[in-house]
Image (cartoon, rainbow, N blue to C red; front, side):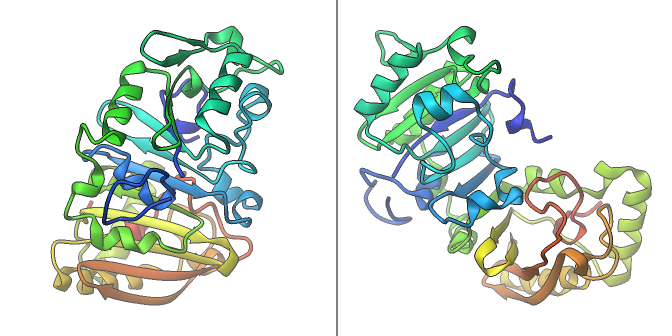
Length: 328
């Protein structure tokens, strides 16, 4: 099970409403603006756009959600569900983990809901709930909702088990700390998330770890080494993005490299690993995804797949993905 789906996982929650990658900081931010709301040294971001109706009906997309099954206090008390929020994101930073979720109502309305379900506000504006307040229908809400700070200028609520994580994200949203949007290496791959109902952006360490064949044992790792040896050499990427558009049955993997030459080479090499036995998964790759195109777009290698009806979980990160992995 993913760390951010465990009830005890330290998470944080930011909520925002519409804006642009380049330009003035918007007063309302949408899912495209996540990079402006997370620290520059972020390790990974998972975003689900609930405003696209296909997302709520797809178990592979809801696997990345902190709201799915969050319980009565969050769903009924705060009104935060996949059906009511526009989007949510899970964020891993160097100091903790965070979730970002677009508020369905105003900051004032949210404050009143927080008060009604048992949160208490301190002198700094931080809302806190104890375990009893988070327990509604016999199960506790995820502890990510323990501390909440509302940022009315952005239409954002920041929540975390750790107050320090709340403040870290609030400082980024307010422009007091650098954001991921300030990283010049991100722009080329960030554009790949357009049109995706859900996507994950991971830095090198997180991307390599989540796709590593060794997570499934030495036998699987050995199979991967043989497969890679037969097609060429894998190079480590700077960023890994994988995402889905369920409406179009599309799954995309994109990797940012140090140059366009590397990207072109890696697109070809990794395309050769995108067929045959799905190492570490069930059946063949083609039973789940069929490669339709591979190419380099600047310094980004892109693999476009058609997702099959009975595909294995592609967004839950529960198994290796050799064609998106790093050198052993």
